[in-house]
Length: 178
Image 1 (cartoon, rainbow, N blue to C red):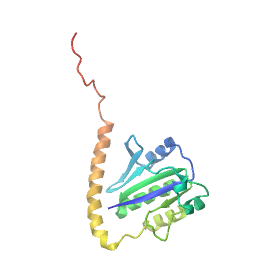
Image 2 (tube, rainbow, N blue to C red):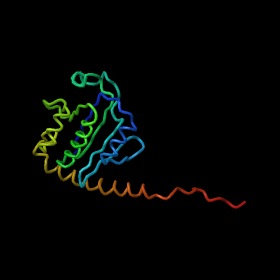
Image 3 (cartoon, rainbow, N blue to C red):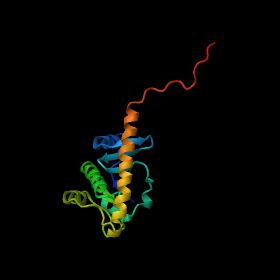
Image 4 (spheres, rainbow, N blue to C red):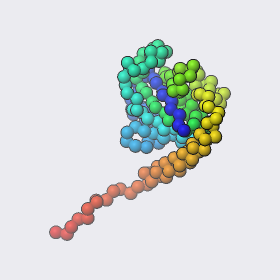
């Protein structure tokens, strides 16, 4: 089971600056389409830079009211429903909030519609997460996400190592003697 978190900022952050922030936070690019992966031990968070449409009219009015203007930068964060991955996502959101104005929506449709930077910091300091998962799903979620986390952390780490050490591509067609 995965959890989705949306991060909205009123700051118009250029892709280059956002990518530098993610690299500094420890994330690695997964593809040329602005997808990043942040991993620590068995925890991971997939970060999508351009997964949300830039349509201000689709944003909830409460978001614009709290931010003071339409969001300019939007991140989609997806992670396994484990405490470790949730804390990793929360830490990333806190780092982002320390740099740019933002709000976080945990997509739980709970009574807490958006988390402010102050809320994020309090959750992180208290070791709590965004929402309160259904206790009956805990064992299944832990099993599924532990397997998923183990796969992604080992598979992606191998992929990163391979990408770093790939020899230059040679010509795919041998030259024929003339």
